[in-house]
Image (tube, rainbow, N blue to C red):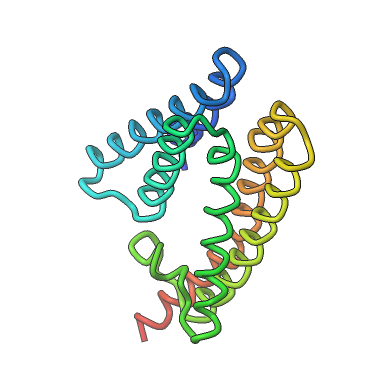
Length: 184
């Protein structure tokens, strides 16, 4: 991934942090949703398709932001990461129970991996999302709003990026095995 593309992808998070610092939580959430929509629009203009995962994330964020503003209740903004991460944990780990690698459902158009890799990634990401959901609950309930924003911006987001990088070796091995399988 090119540095410019990476920076563009983190634009909604950066907008959230700056928006919170200048205007407060509700404005931060609106700015983040607006920038997320911009990122998806640019991706669509470049590739003429929108990936399911970012689209779902944007729609969920927009829905919770709308509810927070309409009901004047910041709890919807603070709970959104818990519900998002918890939902993905349930989907990924639940898929394993029925012997279905759900990571394949979300990312099969981006990667061609072998079955074992899809199952391993589904387990790892499912557990990671579960951990993020539990951590978000702990932080938004146990700390003040500014500390929660710091956690969301400077702990949860970098942890996600580092976790994704940590999955790179298994992903590359899975790509190689999938290429081997198709060439045989």
